[in-house]
Length: 392
Image (cartoon, rainbow, N blue to C red; front, side, top):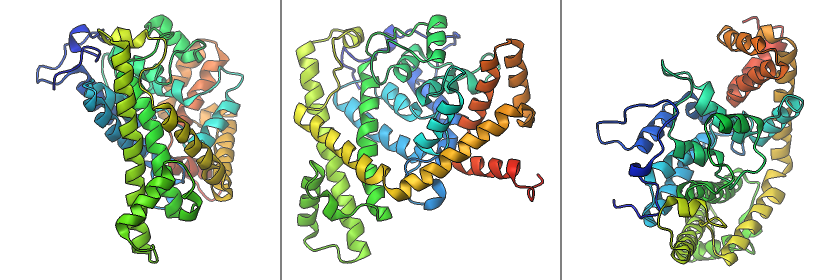
């Protein structure tokens, strides 16, 4: 597919930290980046990391992995319609959560508390650490050695960064990522596709779990319209579980379509007004170009507020989140005060950190270890460390 002039182009790509000959098999640098992300440990363990519902609560709820795949599907669709670099967009969509700790934001909050005196913790910073340092798959370098454009997109997917987290700040000094400008249009698409995916699919999981009811949604912007249209298609009330399932899917498809269609239309208008001659014109614009229309953007914020009030703060979700937060907090306390309890393969990292004589480095190793856990592994490790009946 011919790319628009404002798309990220292979001819002007800025390369990698560690120079490598690019693929001779016809793969673009960003197809290669995407493949490295897919084969990484950080991506694979997303299969058993919480999205909203902890993995063992049901086999059919979203996990961080299925969420990332859904973000990628939406992002590819938008990028293709705007003649943008679909490979880069897909790579960023798949990689955006690779640093997320177990138990979703509850686990992140626990690590933030544990690391507050040791340069803090954020899952955005951790994603960059995962792809630049923690992955150990290659002989010549740590990390995945992704392209500049992929690293820039991961770092700035939420916009310009004036006060970077410690690791990003240090990494930017080593390999400048132009933090004060916007990221590429491809990165902006991956970011807003994340919102579309988790809003629509968290509605789906909330209905599936019985925490939300259709009657709760009838007055919600976009969702209420989608529900009304879905009912017209089915033409009968969802009196059975089977009918309920079809109605739910019909509604969610329409929610996604409304959001994606508006995003494509408004972004195309923004690009036409900006008239960019290259990808840097997107980066140095006064505002992000990938946006909803004002009306749909406002409605999308109402969906977010509804989900926080009725799903994320639902007592059942909060109860499980609290358990996850307490478990991660206690894991951090146990391992940070008894670092010799870390598995053998982490001892070399700990020794290297201690050589720097910076206390924060050793605590960072503990945070890295915990952040890389799945929900299930975190529960099992906690049991191994605290339950006298478990001798292994």
